[in-house]
Image 1 (cartoon, rainbow, N blue to C red):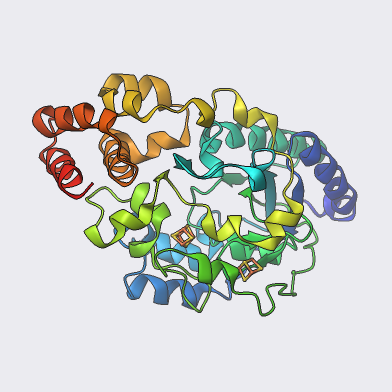
Image 2: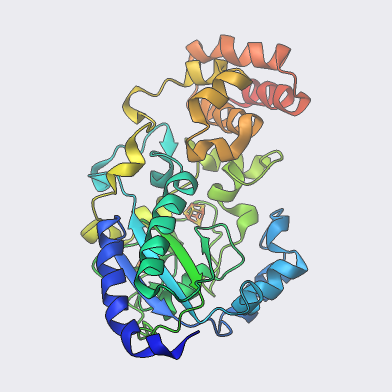
Length: 353
Ligand code: SF4
Ligand code: SF4
């Protein structure tokens, strides 16, 4: 890094903040890539099996990088953290009866939208420090980095008891994203306060009691994990507790007063091909074949559950909200689905409806 720029980086930092806001990032902070203080908690979480079947979190190189972000980019001097709101308007008044889809998944897939915006922000930074050569890596929930701690260190907010990053005056319905970069920006002050106080609303409301005392989650029991990342069957003990959630779960955020009071308007970019909850028809969804599922959801976060996972979730939701119109489509799946686990689940649903 050419020292020529040291004196100018602070004013460039302010310009970056303004540019980030223009791109739709409501919050931005800067920090340094030192060893995270929550690393031991993370390791303990893995060792205790709370990561369930998320093997990508357990790989030695992935663990090592979470401990030392400089293993990702040895020249890394700063991590820029940005946040973007995704709450649909009036979420607090939203009818969460059925189907229940996590707020973040109603719009388009943030993995498609946010990287484009991050690249634009990097391009802006490059233009400001030219001719310095810029090395960087961008992530949005995709890299081996302790994202919430990094956001806290960058001054954005605190990690709530519901394990989410809570931004004061804005809540937790945000996507987080990071730029690891070789430019030595002055770090912002760490957010040291904890405004959860004596509140336990999220812990008390979690239907599967999976929020742990150390602000982590036992993924094996979490509806978000069970309906999204989990590739296998959903254990019987949780099937009734899904209670209509077909993709993700928002309860521990929905009950948080920081969200009820301060939810922010979402970035309109996310709602081009959004799922229309008001017109959602579970019978049509149960009838989707693989290619119809792909056509409908390939730009939606729902695609992450994959076809069989989505069908599994729909079947359980159908069983929990059963009416006679569902009998034929479930019967059809029980007899004809190519996946024996899905056929078996359809039979279970009909028996236990
Ligand atoms: S997402 Fe749902 S199941 Fe998971 S911790 Fe939050 S309330 Fe509990
Ligand atoms: S519900 Fe209460 S305890 Fe949970 S994250 Fe929000 S403020 Fe913290």
